[in-house]
Amino acid sequence: MKLYNVLIQSVLALTFSTYSLAVEQIVHVAVDHAPPYSRLSENNHSQGLILDILKYAQLTSDKKYKIKAVPCPFSRCVRLLSKGKVDVMGGLIRTPEREKIMSFVEPPYMVLSSSFVFYGQQNSDIEVERYEDLQGKRIAVMRGGAFFPRFDKDNSLNKIAVPSERVAVDLVLKGRVDLVIAVEDTADIAMDALDQPMHRLKKMQYRHTQAIYGYMAMSESFANSGLGDHISKQMHSMAKNKTLDQLVAPYHLPKIPSSLIEPAASFSPH
Image (cartoon, rainbow, N blue to C red):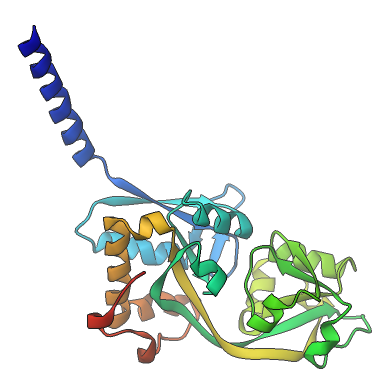
């Protein structure tokens, strides 16, 4: 009887091991609605640049895994990533606060030299000519979003967190907030994709100009896994051989500067 039990356990262990090898890993990718770089349709079908990149990496990988998009509002996407409920998210600005709860993959794949600008109602008498003019204004910001350091750290401003850019613009148009912050280079495209009346908005004179980098980020647990490390190294190789430049081109993004691509010898994905 003991021999029989040992035999059964051995067969079960072998069967489970074979099954485990046959099952592909799933990479859960958080995707928010942020046209033109990512879109969610009414049936929550996801598409966008981060999925394009990961699908290319999947097709050229010797590892077997599947990609599953997880549609979510931006703030929830960030929260899911920080808690390890999803594995990957794209288009994130790197900040010291975020580095404590997620792992950023080098190099960034979205590189913009643009300005953060503020929009108000076209018929509003509000003017913002310098940073100090933001005081006392109700400013819609996307919940969980990161902008520029001075603005992010300024607790004296009246920042009203909203779940999406569409909601932010709606609140401006309805007069419930005074301003919304946006990236100048992409605002016009985004407003058109969101079917928002750009002609009813007024761009303020004040702007903060800087290089804006959008990164792929991983949950800490996924970044430390074999597959996470593999995808991180793929990302670096794709940047080095200019594949990333081809993938971002349809989104009207510039090529990744060589200065941002670390030498392979010093590459560390985490």
